[in-house]
Amino acid sequence: AQRVTQPEKLLSVFKGAPVELKCNYSYSGSPELFWYVQYSRQRLQLLLRHISRESIKGFTADLNKGETSFHLKKPFAQEEDSAMYYCALISGNTGKLIFGQGTTLQVKP
Amino acid sequence: NAGVTQTPKFQVLKTGQSMTLQCAQDMNHNSMYWYRQDPGMGLRLIYYSASEGTTDKGEVPNGYNVSRLNKREFSLRLESAAPSQTSVYFCASSGFIGYEQYFGPGTRLTVT
Image: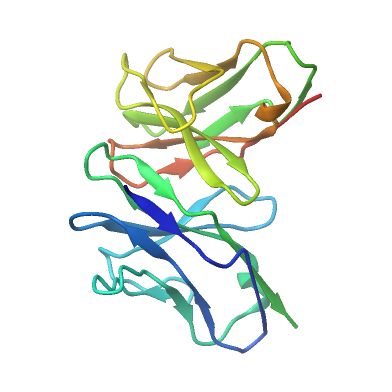
């Protein structure tokens, strides 16, 4: 079964600390993975996708096929990073997005 | 460009009432989606429309119906609302199935 798991409901760090939001997936084949972010009172928006291998707002994510993970990392958290983060993968069969449960990142001053 | 718009923003219904959530996009996208967002459950796909004239069930379609009115508009209907349908509903669109999805602002629905 295709599944995305985000084991942490809440991650709380201090400003300037490193951040790692965990994402594990279950998928047979080569997955296409994404991170979406939802800031308070804003709509969900794409943060980054593994295909582009880019860094957005200081965040990076590397696909680890051996560990079936796609963890989101940032070396120095900022207060404006506080938001809900969703990991998602595209089902190759249907093209539909499958979301994880989401992790709330709280960056304290 | 407004992107993806949804109406209404908030709605309170009594059990058994019906209502339609409206969604429109101005990006000339072919595919549109309806999700519900519940605490601890992430976003779950209710229905989607790969292209104008087609609709398909997602993960949690029971209790809902959809209409792809034209390329721009995709509505979600609750025929007989139940408290279990209390949720935040998001509409999204993408160029094609499998492409990046763009989300609307959401509709917060409470069923009492």
